[in-house]
Image (cartoon, rainbow, N blue to C red; front, side, top):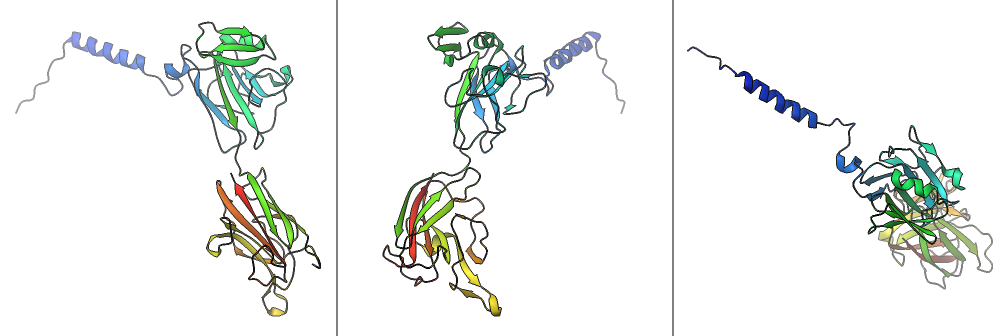
Length: 321
């Protein structure tokens, strides 16, 4: 069989070259943003603040900007509540931005308006994150102390009214964000003859701190032999999330309840000298939207009676959110 090679007409080659050239001209490298994100004609919308960290990354939709600010509280403005403000002219601040990290080519203006940068955000505080385009930044910078608000209806870039500087949605985006990495505790109620109990949250973990003050007359010391936490509003052996018990291994024998060794305060989950852990505290800590029951007892408790009138025993309930 004889194979023939089809002759390609020069005009066809030229047309193909034009098509390839056009397609390639429309290609973008990973360094080049899509127009809807980088272009200047879109409103700045959908600010997203990373959760679960104290130095969050912040991103937004609508284009690059010239200013990125963070205020403590629920109001954006150039004053002493600023904890972060960076500026880079020509709308050259790209997303995402990370709190506390100064981008190459940008300037830190936090202190210029009386603000003070923090190493990281604080647990249980509320912050306002905002970004602004260059066309609005010049006016914002000239109006320190004015509250920044988004104007979604005006065609003007900015509009001053009293103590508020309204900025077009095309040039300003805001996000009021609470920092809530760890659990909080409320509605602590203490019961029982042995002691008054309090439970508090920390800003470093989901493990609470338990404090107690002995109030029962005739108790020889301020220490305990047993402490634990159960999920729910009462003691339930099947729902125990943490328990430690005094242990004595002297003389080659293991004996429980013979000593009072647990002092106040107690950081839940940490090792306590002279005790043995019977229920390990979960790595994730206590769960939100749950009620818990914490109990304490000394070596003289009968290990049965858990009522309010039980000697050498006390308990408390609390809610986690």
